[in-house]
Image (cartoon, rainbow, N blue to C red):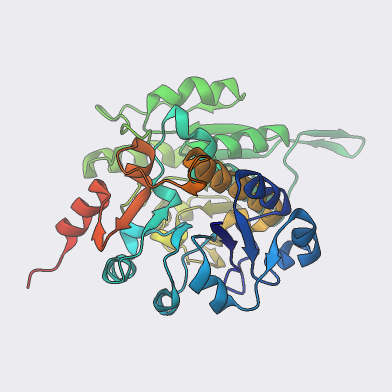
Length: 383
């Protein structure tokens, strides 16, 4: 009977996990045996006994899981030093492959098959597996809550005997999954919301949430086949910065969500623009940990810049770890279920399928994802 194993995250700051008791039941119904590392759900107050009641087995040690699992699921990559301890397990997690060439090389060297949850293609059939979107949606919510906690005023308009409080103004840059959730959350909390995206096709979605879409003529832009925004030219970037500067200066909260898949994010807000903002305003930089949309933002930290709070905390879904774990666990379950064959009672690695062709990055000692392979070849230092 194949073993699907859930392993604890090694980062002390990571509270999410890749498997909940409900997932254990579903895996058992597929016909798999389920092992968990002790304390798998302890960060979100799920005791081991709940997993055992669902049909899981408690592994004797972490090493025993690494050596015996057929499918090993986690949120973050298995530490590099532990790859040597793997048996024949297929790894499933977020892998950040474009920014981790050394890790990808080690996967190839050890002939490990690895599925990167970021690489699942954005097609209708794979929506239920799209962990990047599920976590981004939670990030959009959390960023608004975090910004609100630092702002020295309320978001909604309030009419009181002591006077009327005007609603706060929120500006969201980037109307992808995270941006749309940020817009919806800020609007529900009573703020006046404006949003901008280089893809004019999302204007209708922004307006349907009750926000105003800031129209900036950038010429030819668009989006990729996967639905991501295309990179702008330096001239387009400068036009965007100039045109949105007035809106930023007039806002109480600015949230930037512009991330380019596999590339360094663009700098959307420079120090000059920050200096024009009202003292006590808040900027949340979703991309701080991968390069930053805001000049001067510090990965993982909150700091004051020109009397403006700049938030670069990162790992936003971790702030709502229980819901994030539920969504991620279901994404992984849906992926495994899609390719689980009842007759053979195993996970079938069909690399001709468009989902696995996108998600599997290494197999048989080679990089098998075409996009990642091209990226690594283009960034390889000449010998």
